[in-house]
Amino acid sequence: MNVLSAWCGLRRARIWVNAAFHIQLMTDPFAPLSEEEFEELDHFLLFGVDTEEGMTMDMVDGFLHAIAVGPTTVHPKQWLPKIWGTKEMMPPMGSVEELNHMLGLVMRHFNTIIAGLGDDPREISPCWSTMAYDGDEREYDDAESWAYGFVQGMRLCWKDWQPLLSTPQGQVWFRPIALLGEDDYCVDQDELTRTPAMRSELAQQIPPAVLDMHAHWLPLRLAVYQREVAKSMQPKVGRNDPCPCGSGAKFKKCCGAAADLH
Image 1 (cartoon, rainbow, N blue to C red):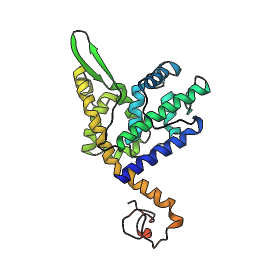
Image 2: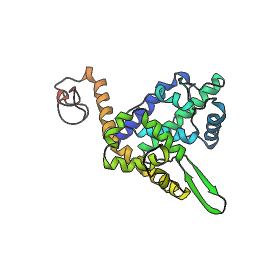
Image 3: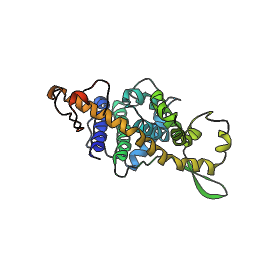
Image 4: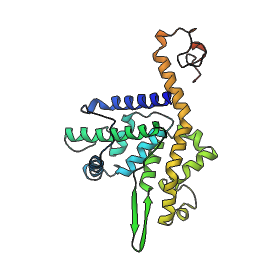
């Protein structure tokens, strides 16, 4: 758990630092959004970004979850333009102060998602809507936009996802997301998502599936993290010294080897 917490902290810090050159310094860049801030960002995405390709808040939440749990660390300069529907890291409208503020809200929300994945127990709180229909007292989860955003996040490093998606277990985890968020996923997709109750049931399968995906990729991420730590220490570690990852092997036989990750 110590290594996991360290990895999550490093990942959050790096993501924040890499994006922060346009953002004014905050008191706590990892604080969860308040209800008012969440609604403010939601309103900005709906009305403040004048592009047809921009995302809504539920799409953004799914998008960021995919980036957070996936196999590859994706730099903000690759995914921020997808949120605004532009080719730029910054949204295309508003004052500089407003743009910096909104970018800060996005980064804080992303950090909150990553923090939840580093908690014990791990947890996610996907942000999607509920729907009510005349003559029906029930409320149904509406996760289609969220699932669409998740798929778009996966597509940022689609090839890296294939080792999981090509397995039977990976297909089971991906199925509820794909049925709600992908076009032409399977021939009976329309029938499987025909009613609000069917779509709501699929939505309820998503949180445990996402946590399972995260657990699947975690060993790879930890290996990459440990390798980066070892590389940063290379000037201080001799090739015949014990490897700093704690394996007990010599550095040259462990994280100092060119081809291996431990």
